Length: 205
Length: 193
Image (cartoon, rainbow over all chains, first blue to last red; front, top):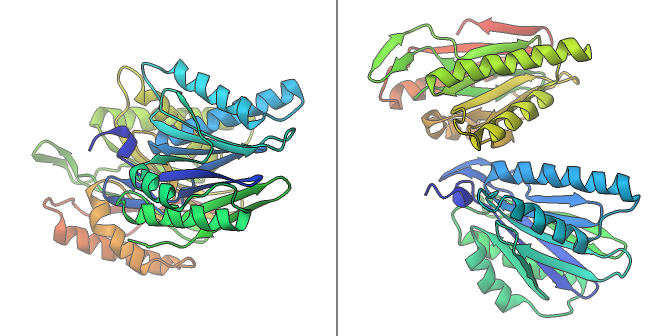
C-alpha cells in the first residue's frame, strides 16, 4: 500500500465523439483509506488542450504547474497556442526525461485541433509512452473498472449530449466500484466552438 | 502521535497543537509549542521528524521574511503555501528529504481565513478544516458533522474543545492539552483554551 500511484487515489477518462471530445475525473483526494478532500480536480486546461493527471497528488500538482509554464513559454515564443498533438509529444518527452526517477502520474491529453478541427485524445504511462486511441483512454486507481464499463457503453460517433451521458455513467459506475475514487466528479464536453463544464454529484462513501 | 488541528472561519483561522514533546516512550516536556509565526498574518504548525521540524520551519520563516523585505510587502497565505509545497516536493527527491507535515494558517488580502494542509510528500490541499496524523481519524467525523461555512469564533472554539475531548478519550497517550492560536486581521494571538 506504499505504492506511490495509489496513496491518494483518483481516476480519469477521456472519450472521442462526432467532432467533439469529453474528459472527466473524480474529485477525491485521500491519504490511504482516509478521505481528505472532495474538491481536488485532476483536469487542467491550457488553451485548447485538456490535461488530466491521476496518481500521486504531489506529482499531479508539480507536473500540472510544469506544463502550465511550458505552454506559456511556447505561447510567448511562437505567438500561437499549442495544439493537442504537439502537447502530447511534449508530455511524452518531458516524462521520459525522468526515466529513472519518474513522476508517479497517469496523464491523459484531450482536445480539438484549432486548425483542422480534428478531435484528439491520448494517454501515457508514467515514463511517457504514448497510447494513441480512437475511442477512449482511462487512467487511475479505477482504470480496470473503467476499461470494462467503457468497452460496454462506448460507441463511435456520438453527438456531444450522448457522449456526456456515456462518459458520466462510465466514470460514476467505475468510481463506485473503487474505494479510492469518487467523492464527486467533473466532466468537460468540448466541441469546436463550445466548452461545457459540469460537476456531477456522486456517492459520498 | 503529535496533534495538529486547524479550523478556518470566515475572517480568521484557528490552529491547535498538542503540548507534549515526546521522544520514544517518554514525554520530555508538557509545554511544547509546535507553531511558528511567519509574519503578521501567517502561522505554521509543524510535526514530524524532530530535527527536521524546527530546521524546516525556520528555513521557511527566514525565506518568508526575506521576501517581505525584498518585495516591500508581506507574503500572502497562498503564496506561502505554494512556496512550502514546492520546497517539500523538491526535498522529497533529494538525498535526505525533510519528513515534516504542516498546516499553513492565516488571513489573505481579502481578510478571509485561509488554511492549507501540506504533507512531507508535497501534497497540498486548501481546506475548511484539517488535521494531520492519527488525530485526523478521530476528529474528521466531528468536524464534518459540526462545521458550518459561516461558523463563529465561539462555535469554532467549542468545536475544538469537542475535538480535544474526543482525542483525550481515544488517544493512547496523554498529549498534555492543546495550544490554540487565532490568526485574524489584527494579527496572531494565543488563546486561553
